[in-house]
Image (cartoon, rainbow, N blue to C red; front, top):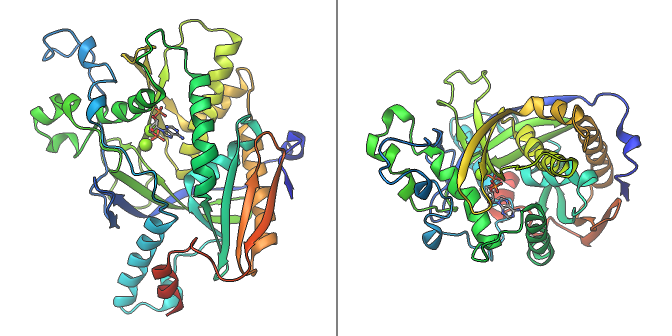
Length: 392
Ligand code: A3P
Ligand code: MG
Ligand code: MG
């Protein structure tokens, strides 16, 4: 059992963190086919233009985020992808180096913990998230703990709680045709309106001006794999990155100017309640971006009916300071310190142990529970091909 409360447990001192550094990348194409080590689906930031001269009928009709809602291509939620995309990418990288004759011990991509970034986001925000409710599967293999979402739990509970959260966060729309699904589409549509498939200089004018007609396909993703560290735990995290500002620098020692895109309702009146809501949203935005080294966030503010109204740029590293000068809804150092302690506890509990373990935080609970669900092996958490590759 690991207690995430009281917060005062985690208030003292600064926890060491290691700046996330990209080590690998991969994509999923429009059919969700994995493209290991590829940046083919990376998008390039190019903000939508308000009142563009080429829009003849006034911009409003063209800047409504619902445009194209009837045609978007959704992800198949019934498939559990585990950590497969990440592990197959690590494998492809290691196999390429082995083929060049490099020794095994120099080739291996290793850390204490390997996971999707979203899992760490859930852990890092748990103390402040009233709706927090997750179940993870964890297994140890060759001195690394692999963490994945327990998909069965995700399907039944999390989707409901996400919808609850989204509905709670969203202003009730006077227009009943606006559904939670449409509001979800707005987020993806904003990403399509704010990015280009290639750097600006390589795109035709037609491509830039016709972004509004692009069919939104959420299978297409670019993912970055980073090496990072929180406290005494080293991590390899993979996460989707929305786009890059300009392009990736050719010098690998330079940080990459990633941009995270988010939508949010325009705040009509500033009151303590609306500020608190915004700060809570900033917690998720900051955590998600911080973990994978995204320095900039662009928020597209929208009306209750989905008209894109304005843009705001945020510096990721300034977000916690902004909140500490506001209503202090959360403290970034507490998030980091709790996560460091949690990871330490997880390592003590699991390193060297066989089997698959369940890591569970019940809604409104203040404790993370750990229990064994399979006594031997690593279950399906680790992709069988990856396991065979590592055991060769
Ligand atoms: P917004 O966050 O702007 O609403 P991301 O910002 O993480 O790249 O995700 C892009 C969009 O996917 C989100 O845009 C939202 O529409 C949708 N989305 C992401 N996570 C979600 C979740 N847990 N539940 C519902 N929709 C989600
Ligand atoms: Mg995204
Ligand atoms: Mg986004």
